[in-house]
Length: 268
Image 1 (tube, one colour):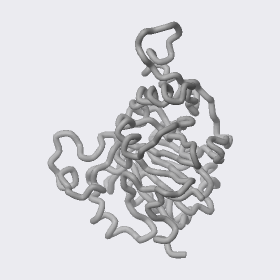
Image 2 (cartoon, one colour):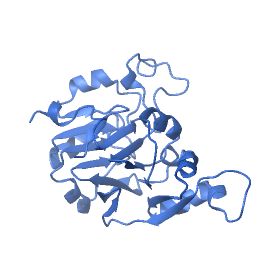
Image 3 (cartoon, one colour):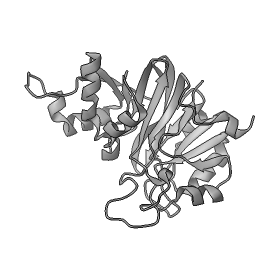
Image 4 (cartoon, one colour):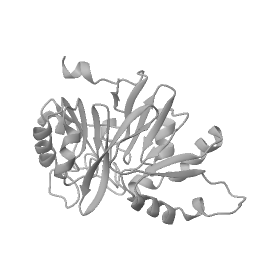
C-alpha cells in the first residue's frame, strides 16, 4: 500500500490522532520576527505550540496542554475530554491547563491527569490556585492526578505505552498508541526504549532545526532514528522557524516529512 493511502487527512475516522500544534516553544511565527517562514503565506508554516488530540469514537484525550489549548480545541472542534497525558512540564506543554475548566463544567466531573511524579509536582506548583483546598468564588478546573510509570495503561479504550526519552538531561515521556508513536522534545533515546519503536506504521518525532541543539534532535539526527527503527512513515514535529514547510519537505525522503497543525493520522 502506498504511503499516501496509509495517511491522509483522516478527520472523519472514529479512531485517530490529530496534531493540534507542531511548533517549537516560541511558536511560528515568532514574536518580532520577519523571516521568510514567520511571514509565509503557507498556512503549514503557522505552527502553534505542541499539542495532540487522540479520539476513539465519542471519547478522546489530550497529550499535553500547551499555551494555545483554547485555540486548538476550538479549531479541532473538541467537545469532551476524558483525560490528559503529559510528556513533561515545560511551559510550552502545560500552560494551557486552566483551559480544561470548560470541559469540567460541561462534563460535570473531574478530569484525570496522567503523569510522572516530577510533572505532578511542577503542575501543583505552577497552578497552585487550582489544587489548593477550600472553597472559592473563582472558577478553576476540577482535576485529579493518576501517577504513571513506564508500564502501559489504557485510556479511552486505547493502549498507551509510555516511552522513556531524554530531553537534554531531563527524562520525559513519549507515547505509543497501537502502531503510532509520538516522541516530541527528545535529544536521546535510551537503549531500553527502542523496543517500543519497532514495527511502527507512523512515527511522530521531534526535530527542531538543521543546526545542533542541546536538548532536541536536529533533522539529521531524526533521520538516523528513522533509519534504525524503520517506520513506514515519519512526521517531524516541534519545528522551529528555520524550516520552511514546502522547501524542507522537498529535500526530505518521501517517507519522512514535516508535520503541520491539523494533520490527522488513523489509529484504526
